[in-house]
Length: 410
Image: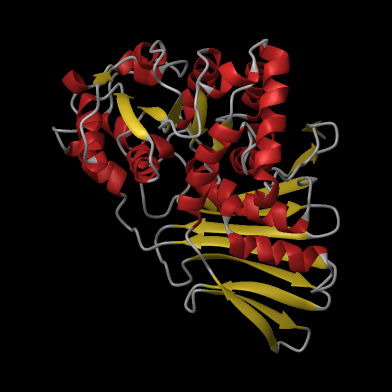
Protein backbone atom coordinates (compact mmCIF):
# COMPACT_ATOMS: atom_id res chain seq x y z
CA UNK A 1 0.00 0.00 0.00
CA UNK A 2 1.57 3.33 -1.03
CA UNK A 3 1.32 6.55 0.91
CA UNK A 4 -0.64 8.79 -1.44
CA UNK A 5 -1.65 12.41 -0.99
CA UNK A 6 -4.92 13.34 -2.65
CA UNK A 7 -5.52 16.88 -3.82
CA UNK A 8 -8.11 18.62 -6.01
CA UNK A 9 -7.04 21.34 -8.46
CA UNK A 10 -10.11 23.56 -8.38
CA UNK A 11 -9.24 25.07 -11.76
CA UNK A 12 -9.80 21.63 -13.27
CA UNK A 13 -12.79 20.82 -11.07
CA UNK A 14 -15.26 20.32 -13.91
CA UNK A 15 -12.84 18.17 -15.89
CA UNK A 16 -12.11 16.00 -12.86
CA UNK A 17 -15.78 15.73 -11.99
CA UNK A 18 -16.61 14.37 -15.43
CA UNK A 19 -13.65 11.99 -15.27
CA UNK A 20 -14.87 10.78 -11.89
CA UNK A 21 -18.36 10.23 -13.23
CA UNK A 22 -16.97 8.36 -16.21
CA UNK A 23 -15.00 6.06 -13.92
CA UNK A 24 -18.02 5.29 -11.81
CA UNK A 25 -20.34 4.76 -14.75
CA UNK A 26 -17.85 2.33 -16.28
CA UNK A 27 -18.11 0.12 -13.20
CA UNK A 28 -21.80 0.58 -12.42
CA UNK A 29 -23.23 0.52 -15.91
CA UNK A 30 -25.18 3.74 -15.28
CA UNK A 31 -25.11 6.55 -17.80
CA UNK A 32 -23.47 9.82 -16.79
CA UNK A 33 -26.87 11.49 -16.85
CA UNK A 34 -28.51 8.91 -14.58
CA UNK A 35 -25.57 9.02 -12.16
CA UNK A 36 -25.69 12.82 -12.00
CA UNK A 37 -29.30 12.62 -10.90
CA UNK A 38 -28.22 10.92 -7.66
CA UNK A 39 -26.65 14.13 -6.38
CA UNK A 40 -27.02 16.77 -9.03
CA UNK A 41 -25.26 20.11 -8.88
CA UNK A 42 -28.43 21.80 -7.65
CA UNK A 43 -29.65 19.00 -5.38
CA UNK A 44 -29.18 19.13 -1.63
CA UNK A 45 -27.21 16.29 -0.09
CA UNK A 46 -29.21 14.27 2.43
CA UNK A 47 -27.26 12.86 5.37
CA UNK A 48 -27.90 10.58 8.31
CA UNK A 49 -25.97 10.54 11.57
CA UNK A 50 -24.82 7.35 13.30
CA UNK A 51 -23.65 8.01 16.85
CA UNK A 52 -24.60 11.72 16.90
CA UNK A 53 -24.34 12.45 20.64
CA UNK A 54 -20.90 14.11 20.84
CA UNK A 55 -18.48 14.79 17.99
CA UNK A 56 -21.03 13.47 15.52
CA UNK A 57 -23.52 16.20 16.33
CA UNK A 58 -20.92 18.87 15.71
CA UNK A 59 -19.98 17.35 12.36
CA UNK A 60 -23.65 17.07 11.35
CA UNK A 61 -24.25 20.69 12.34
CA UNK A 62 -21.26 21.74 10.23
CA UNK A 63 -22.54 19.82 7.21
CA UNK A 64 -25.96 21.41 7.70
CA UNK A 65 -24.44 24.91 7.61
CA UNK A 66 -22.81 23.96 4.32
CA UNK A 67 -26.17 23.14 2.76
CA UNK A 68 -26.70 19.45 3.56
CA UNK A 69 -30.03 18.21 4.93
CA UNK A 70 -29.82 16.12 8.10
CA UNK A 71 -32.77 13.76 7.77
CA UNK A 72 -32.23 10.91 10.28
CA UNK A 73 -30.20 9.91 13.33
CA UNK A 74 -29.35 6.56 14.92
CA UNK A 75 -27.85 5.89 18.35
CA UNK A 76 -28.02 2.97 20.78
CA UNK A 77 -28.35 5.54 23.59
CA UNK A 78 -31.65 7.44 23.52
CA UNK A 79 -30.25 10.04 25.93
CA UNK A 80 -27.34 10.85 23.63
CA UNK A 81 -29.73 10.83 20.69
CA UNK A 82 -31.76 13.62 22.32
CA UNK A 83 -28.56 15.48 23.10
CA UNK A 84 -27.51 15.30 19.47
CA UNK A 85 -30.84 16.67 18.31
CA UNK A 86 -30.41 19.70 20.57
CA UNK A 87 -26.92 20.37 19.24
CA UNK A 88 -28.04 20.10 15.61
CA UNK A 89 -30.91 22.44 16.39
CA UNK A 90 -33.38 21.35 13.73
CA UNK A 91 -35.83 18.41 13.64
CA UNK A 92 -35.10 15.31 11.58
CA UNK A 93 -37.49 12.97 9.78
CA UNK A 94 -36.89 10.08 12.15
CA UNK A 95 -34.56 8.65 14.80
CA UNK A 96 -33.51 5.03 15.24
CA UNK A 97 -31.80 2.82 17.80
CA UNK A 98 -30.51 0.39 15.16
CA UNK A 99 -28.41 2.09 12.47
CA UNK A 100 -29.39 -0.63 10.00
CA UNK A 101 -32.85 0.92 9.85
CA UNK A 102 -31.29 4.23 8.87
CA UNK A 103 -29.10 2.59 6.22
CA UNK A 104 -32.15 0.89 4.71
CA UNK A 105 -33.53 4.27 3.65
CA UNK A 106 -33.07 4.95 -0.06
CA UNK A 107 -33.38 8.72 0.34
CA UNK A 108 -30.11 9.13 2.27
CA UNK A 109 -26.97 9.89 0.24
CA UNK A 110 -24.40 9.57 2.99
CA UNK A 111 -23.80 9.17 6.71
CA UNK A 112 -21.57 10.69 9.36
CA UNK A 113 -20.29 7.99 11.71
CA UNK A 114 -19.12 8.99 15.18
CA UNK A 115 -19.70 5.82 17.16
CA UNK A 116 -17.23 4.43 19.71
CA UNK A 117 -14.09 3.15 18.00
CA UNK A 118 -14.88 -0.55 18.37
CA UNK A 119 -18.03 -0.10 16.28
CA UNK A 120 -16.30 1.67 13.36
CA UNK A 121 -15.38 -1.54 11.54
CA UNK A 122 -18.86 -2.99 11.16
CA UNK A 123 -20.67 0.33 10.81
CA UNK A 124 -18.42 1.50 7.98
CA UNK A 125 -18.65 -1.79 6.09
CA UNK A 126 -22.44 -1.88 6.45
CA UNK A 127 -22.72 1.74 5.33
CA UNK A 128 -20.76 1.41 2.09
CA UNK A 129 -22.48 -1.91 1.40
CA UNK A 130 -25.78 0.01 1.65
CA UNK A 131 -24.54 2.48 -0.97
CA UNK A 132 -23.87 5.39 1.37
CA UNK A 133 -20.95 7.78 1.24
CA UNK A 134 -19.33 8.14 4.63
CA UNK A 135 -17.58 10.67 6.84
CA UNK A 136 -16.17 8.58 9.69
CA UNK A 137 -14.46 9.98 12.75
CA UNK A 138 -10.91 9.02 13.57
CA UNK A 139 -9.43 6.67 14.55
CA UNK A 140 -10.52 4.60 11.57
CA UNK A 141 -9.88 1.27 13.32
CA UNK A 142 -9.58 -0.16 16.81
CA UNK A 143 -6.88 -2.62 15.71
CA UNK A 144 -4.33 -2.88 12.90
CA UNK A 145 -5.98 -6.06 11.65
CA UNK A 146 -9.31 -4.36 10.92
CA UNK A 147 -7.84 -1.87 8.47
CA UNK A 148 -7.10 -3.98 5.41
CA UNK A 149 -10.61 -5.42 5.18
CA UNK A 150 -12.16 -2.00 5.67
CA UNK A 151 -10.04 -0.62 2.82
CA UNK A 152 -10.98 -3.51 0.53
CA UNK A 153 -14.71 -3.14 1.24
CA UNK A 154 -14.62 0.60 0.63
CA UNK A 155 -12.75 0.27 -2.66
CA UNK A 156 -15.09 -2.47 -3.84
CA UNK A 157 -18.11 -0.31 -3.05
CA UNK A 158 -16.98 2.78 -5.01
CA UNK A 159 -18.34 4.96 -2.19
CA UNK A 160 -16.66 8.17 -1.03
CA UNK A 161 -15.21 7.82 2.48
CA UNK A 162 -13.56 10.67 4.33
CA UNK A 163 -11.82 9.89 7.65
CA UNK A 164 -11.96 12.67 10.22
CA UNK A 165 -8.23 13.45 10.26
CA UNK A 166 -9.13 17.07 9.60
CA UNK A 167 -5.61 18.47 9.82
CA UNK A 168 -5.11 16.99 6.35
CA UNK A 169 -7.29 19.90 5.11
CA UNK A 170 -5.27 22.62 6.85
CA UNK A 171 -3.68 25.13 4.48
CA UNK A 172 -1.10 26.05 7.14
CA UNK A 173 0.18 22.47 7.26
CA UNK A 174 0.10 22.29 3.48
CA UNK A 175 2.42 25.32 3.38
CA UNK A 176 4.78 23.61 5.83
CA UNK A 177 4.80 20.52 3.63
CA UNK A 178 5.70 22.59 0.57
CA UNK A 179 8.65 24.17 2.41
CA UNK A 180 9.94 20.81 3.63
CA UNK A 181 9.52 19.18 0.21
CA UNK A 182 11.49 22.00 -1.44
CA UNK A 183 14.36 21.58 1.00
CA UNK A 184 13.60 24.84 2.80
CA UNK A 185 14.80 23.60 6.20
CA UNK A 186 17.14 20.89 4.95
CA UNK A 187 16.84 17.21 5.72
CA UNK A 188 14.64 16.52 8.74
CA UNK A 189 16.17 14.52 11.56
CA UNK A 190 13.65 15.09 14.36
CA UNK A 191 9.92 15.83 14.68
CA UNK A 192 8.17 16.68 17.94
CA UNK A 193 4.37 16.49 18.21
CA UNK A 194 2.33 17.03 21.35
CA UNK A 195 -1.15 17.59 22.79
CA UNK A 196 -1.48 18.97 26.32
CA UNK A 197 -4.78 20.11 27.86
CA UNK A 198 -6.06 21.23 31.27
CA UNK A 199 -8.58 18.52 32.03
CA UNK A 200 -7.71 17.02 35.44
CA UNK A 201 -11.28 15.72 35.84
CA UNK A 202 -12.40 13.70 32.88
CA UNK A 203 -15.76 15.03 31.62
CA UNK A 204 -16.75 11.68 30.12
CA UNK A 205 -16.49 9.87 33.44
CA UNK A 206 -18.09 12.81 35.25
CA UNK A 207 -21.21 12.77 33.08
CA UNK A 208 -21.66 9.00 33.50
CA UNK A 209 -23.69 9.77 36.62
CA UNK A 210 -26.22 11.84 34.64
CA UNK A 211 -29.42 9.73 34.55
CA UNK A 212 -30.69 11.66 31.52
CA UNK A 213 -27.74 10.42 29.47
CA UNK A 214 -26.54 7.16 30.98
CA UNK A 215 -29.14 4.88 32.51
CA UNK A 216 -29.61 1.19 31.66
CA UNK A 217 -33.14 1.82 30.37
CA UNK A 218 -31.82 4.36 27.84
CA UNK A 219 -29.15 2.18 26.28
CA UNK A 220 -29.33 -0.93 24.14
CA UNK A 221 -26.28 -2.39 25.88
CA UNK A 222 -25.79 -5.45 23.61
CA UNK A 223 -25.73 -3.16 20.56
CA UNK A 224 -23.24 -0.88 22.31
CA UNK A 225 -20.95 -3.83 22.99
CA UNK A 226 -21.12 -5.12 19.44
CA UNK A 227 -18.18 -7.52 18.96
CA UNK A 228 -16.53 -6.43 22.23
CA UNK A 229 -16.40 -8.82 25.22
CA UNK A 230 -19.75 -9.25 26.97
CA UNK A 231 -19.94 -7.35 30.26
CA UNK A 232 -22.70 -6.13 32.60
CA UNK A 233 -23.85 -2.57 32.01
CA UNK A 234 -21.31 0.00 33.25
CA UNK A 235 -22.08 3.73 32.96
CA UNK A 236 -18.38 4.65 33.07
CA UNK A 237 -17.74 2.42 30.07
CA UNK A 238 -20.82 3.69 28.24
CA UNK A 239 -19.71 7.32 28.60
CA UNK A 240 -15.92 7.06 28.90
CA UNK A 241 -15.41 4.27 26.38
CA UNK A 242 -12.27 6.00 25.03
CA UNK A 243 -10.37 4.97 28.14
CA UNK A 244 -11.16 1.23 28.11
CA UNK A 245 -9.19 -1.26 26.05
CA UNK A 246 -12.30 -3.18 24.94
CA UNK A 247 -13.54 -0.20 22.94
CA UNK A 248 -10.61 2.09 22.13
CA UNK A 249 -6.91 2.82 22.64
CA UNK A 250 -6.97 5.76 25.01
CA UNK A 251 -5.16 9.01 24.34
CA UNK A 252 -2.73 7.38 21.93
CA UNK A 253 -5.38 6.45 19.35
CA UNK A 254 -7.81 9.24 20.25
CA UNK A 255 -5.29 12.05 19.76
CA UNK A 256 -2.35 10.35 18.06
CA UNK A 257 -3.92 9.98 14.58
CA UNK A 258 -4.17 13.75 14.17
CA UNK A 259 -0.54 14.49 14.91
CA UNK A 260 0.98 11.38 13.38
CA UNK A 261 -0.95 12.31 10.23
CA UNK A 262 0.64 15.77 10.24
CA UNK A 263 4.12 14.36 10.89
CA UNK A 264 3.90 11.74 8.13
CA UNK A 265 2.29 14.11 5.62
CA UNK A 266 4.81 16.89 6.01
CA UNK A 267 7.85 14.60 6.02
CA UNK A 268 6.56 12.22 3.34
CA UNK A 269 7.26 9.26 5.60
CA UNK A 270 5.64 5.87 5.04
CA UNK A 271 5.67 5.08 8.75
CA UNK A 272 7.81 3.92 11.66
CA UNK A 273 10.30 1.06 11.73
CA UNK A 274 10.33 0.74 15.52
CA UNK A 275 8.08 2.14 18.25
CA UNK A 276 8.75 2.52 21.97
CA UNK A 277 6.12 3.86 24.35
CA UNK A 278 5.80 4.44 28.07
CA UNK A 279 3.74 6.45 30.52
CA UNK A 280 1.25 5.74 33.22
CA UNK A 281 -2.06 6.43 34.92
CA UNK A 282 -1.40 9.24 37.37
CA UNK A 283 -4.62 11.22 37.66
CA UNK A 284 -7.61 9.42 36.14
CA UNK A 285 -7.85 6.30 38.25
CA UNK A 286 -11.10 5.16 36.58
CA UNK A 287 -9.30 4.73 33.25
CA UNK A 288 -7.75 1.49 32.02
CA UNK A 289 -5.59 3.30 29.47
CA UNK A 290 -2.74 5.65 30.50
CA UNK A 291 -3.51 9.34 31.05
CA UNK A 292 0.09 10.43 30.39
CA UNK A 293 1.78 8.66 27.50
CA UNK A 294 4.89 9.29 25.38
CA UNK A 295 6.05 7.44 22.26
CA UNK A 296 9.18 7.45 20.10
CA UNK A 297 8.86 6.45 16.44
CA UNK A 298 12.02 5.59 14.48
CA UNK A 299 11.17 6.39 10.85
CA UNK A 300 14.50 5.37 9.33
CA UNK A 301 16.07 8.79 8.67
CA UNK A 302 14.46 10.72 11.52
CA UNK A 303 12.61 10.22 14.80
CA UNK A 304 9.20 11.40 15.96
CA UNK A 305 8.49 12.03 19.63
CA UNK A 306 4.80 12.25 20.55
CA UNK A 307 3.62 13.34 23.99
CA UNK A 308 0.00 13.55 25.17
CA UNK A 309 -1.60 14.28 28.54
CA UNK A 310 -4.71 16.12 29.72
CA UNK A 311 -3.56 17.37 33.13
CA UNK A 312 -1.62 20.52 32.22
CA UNK A 313 -2.26 22.52 29.05
CA UNK A 314 0.65 24.95 29.20
CA UNK A 315 1.80 24.24 25.63
CA UNK A 316 -1.63 23.24 24.26
CA UNK A 317 -0.91 21.22 21.11
CA UNK A 318 1.37 21.47 18.13
CA UNK A 319 4.14 20.18 15.91
CA UNK A 320 7.77 21.11 15.32
CA UNK A 321 9.98 19.97 12.44
CA UNK A 322 13.73 20.21 12.90
CA UNK A 323 15.90 20.13 9.78
CA UNK A 324 19.62 20.56 9.24
CA UNK A 325 19.08 24.07 7.82
CA UNK A 326 16.19 25.33 9.94
CA UNK A 327 12.93 24.56 11.69
CA UNK A 328 9.17 24.95 11.35
CA UNK A 329 7.33 25.29 14.65
CA UNK A 330 3.64 25.67 15.42
CA UNK A 331 3.41 28.47 17.98
CA UNK A 332 -0.10 28.46 19.39
CA UNK A 333 0.49 31.48 21.62
CA UNK A 334 0.82 33.49 18.40
CA UNK A 335 -1.61 31.45 16.31
CA UNK A 336 1.12 31.03 13.76
CA UNK A 337 3.35 28.53 12.01
CA UNK A 338 6.89 29.93 12.04
CA UNK A 339 9.88 29.04 9.92
CA UNK A 340 13.34 29.64 11.40
CA UNK A 341 16.78 29.40 9.77
CA UNK A 342 19.69 27.52 11.33
CA UNK A 343 20.58 30.56 13.43
CA UNK A 344 17.08 30.59 14.99
CA UNK A 345 16.15 33.73 13.02
CA UNK A 346 12.52 33.96 11.90
CA UNK A 347 12.28 33.70 8.13
CA UNK A 348 8.51 33.74 7.65
CA UNK A 349 5.25 32.97 9.43
CA UNK A 350 1.67 32.23 8.46
CA UNK A 351 -1.62 31.87 10.31
CA UNK A 352 -3.07 28.67 11.73
CA UNK A 353 -6.61 27.92 10.57
CA UNK A 354 -9.43 25.74 11.85
CA UNK A 355 -9.28 22.76 9.53
CA UNK A 356 -12.61 21.17 10.50
CA UNK A 357 -14.91 23.22 8.21
CA UNK A 358 -12.59 22.73 5.24
CA UNK A 359 -12.45 18.99 5.89
CA UNK A 360 -16.24 18.67 5.94
CA UNK A 361 -16.55 20.85 2.84
CA UNK A 362 -14.04 18.61 1.10
CA UNK A 363 -16.21 15.59 1.91
CA UNK A 364 -19.37 17.23 0.56
CA UNK A 365 -17.51 18.40 -2.56
CA UNK A 366 -16.25 14.87 -3.16
CA UNK A 367 -19.73 13.43 -2.76
CA UNK A 368 -20.63 15.49 -5.81
CA UNK A 369 -17.42 15.14 -7.83
CA UNK A 370 -16.67 11.46 -6.92
CA UNK A 371 -13.02 12.43 -6.43
CA UNK A 372 -10.97 11.00 -3.57
CA UNK A 373 -11.19 13.15 -0.40
CA UNK A 374 -8.24 14.58 1.53
CA UNK A 375 -8.19 11.69 4.02
CA UNK A 376 -9.26 8.45 2.29
CA UNK A 377 -9.30 5.15 4.19
CA UNK A 378 -5.97 3.77 2.94
CA UNK A 379 -4.13 6.91 3.96
CA UNK A 380 -5.89 7.13 7.33
CA UNK A 381 -5.11 3.49 8.01
CA UNK A 382 -1.42 4.03 7.26
CA UNK A 383 -1.00 6.99 9.61
CA UNK A 384 -2.89 5.21 12.40
CA UNK A 385 -0.62 2.17 12.58
CA UNK A 386 1.97 4.04 14.65
CA UNK A 387 -0.58 4.74 17.38
CA UNK A 388 -1.63 1.08 17.52
CA UNK A 389 2.02 0.00 17.70
CA UNK A 390 2.64 2.51 20.50
CA UNK A 391 -0.15 0.92 22.54
CA UNK A 392 1.33 -2.51 21.88
CA UNK A 393 4.67 -1.27 23.17
CA UNK A 394 3.09 0.32 26.24
CA UNK A 395 1.12 -2.78 27.17
CA UNK A 396 3.97 -5.22 26.53
CA UNK A 397 6.77 -3.09 27.96
CA UNK A 398 8.87 -3.81 24.85
CA UNK A 399 9.96 -2.10 21.66
CA UNK A 400 7.81 -3.07 18.66
CA UNK A 401 9.34 -3.54 15.20
CA UNK A 402 7.35 -2.79 12.05
CA UNK A 403 7.91 -3.21 8.31
CA UNK A 404 5.95 -0.40 6.56
CA UNK A 405 6.77 -1.78 3.10
CA UNK A 406 5.33 -5.26 3.65
CA UNK A 407 2.87 -3.99 6.28
CA UNK A 408 3.72 -6.44 9.03
CA UNK A 409 5.39 -6.64 12.41
CA UNK A 410 9.13 -7.12 12.26
